[in-house]
Structures are given as C-alpha cells and as structure tokens.
Amino acid sequence: MEDKDYKTLKEELNSTFSDEYIYNAGILIHRMAEDFYSKQGLKGKVYFDESIFEYCLIDILVDIARLKYFHDIELVNYIKLMAYTASWCLKRKPFQMIEGAGTDYIYVNERFVLSLLLQASGCFDSNVKCAKEDKEKVKKLIEQIFYHLKYRNTNPQTLELLLVGIENGKLLYKIG
Image (cartoon, rainbow, N blue to C red; front, side, top):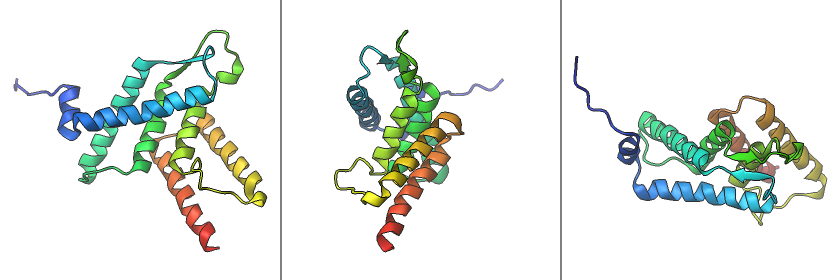
C-alpha cells in the first residue's frame, strides 16, 4: 500500500489563504451576523451558535479555495463570496431558536441570508434611492427572494446569479 502525505484542513486552507484572509473573512461575516442580530432584536428569542458558524466559515473557505484552484484565479469577487456565504448559512443555520420563541423566528436564517444578499447587491447603501412608483415592485421582489430562500434550491450559483441579475438590472434602469 502506498504511503500518502495527507494535509490537515488547516494546512489545506493555509496553502490557499493567509491567516489574515481567513481571519478577515470570518470577521466580516461575523460582524454582519452581529449587526443582523442586534437590528432584528433577536435577544431572548434566537441565539447565534459560534460552533455552527465556524463550520460555515470552513465550508465557505473550502468552496472558495476549490473555485480559485479550478479557475486558476488569485482573488474571488465579493458577489461570489457572498453567494457562498449565503448558501452555507442556509445549510448550516447558525441562528438557532430558543425554546418558546414562537413561529416568527422559524425562518431567521433565511432572513439573515436575505439581509446578506440585499447588502451585497447594494440595496442597503444609503445612496441607493427608489422611485415612489417602484416601491411596491421592490417590496414584491424582496418577498419573492425571501420565498425562494425558504422553499427553493439555494445553491451558490443561483444566489450568485440573483446578485448579478440585480446588479445588471441597476444598469438597465439607468439606461432606460
């Protein structure tokens, strides 16, 4: 039998990313989660499970490392990072309901991912304005995205396509 040299997960990630990149990616996503937690007033109803979050981060980084290797690229764009982050947060569900929290919190992870996607698409940017006549359309679009996150296939590629579509929609709106 051949003697193979296996790398640990940390060694594998460090061959693709620096410790600083891993730390910064973790901080970025964790801050988004903390911000969501406080703005949504989840204390006493939902808790953020740090160990589940760590596995999310590992899964995100492993997928990003595979992308970098497969496409032979140095950096992965922000939209791709957010799509993979959203996908793994939907799978791992780092936000956990506290017993007796009520049905309003069943889809807390999906709401968190919706906030990630809206932020990644620039919808939370203070410079983004919406015409009065379009407010209902935008509200309906957000409801449709939330529905998709709850009930449809949410692999990273579909989430990336959503973000790219929103970005391109902004360009088309400027032209028209």
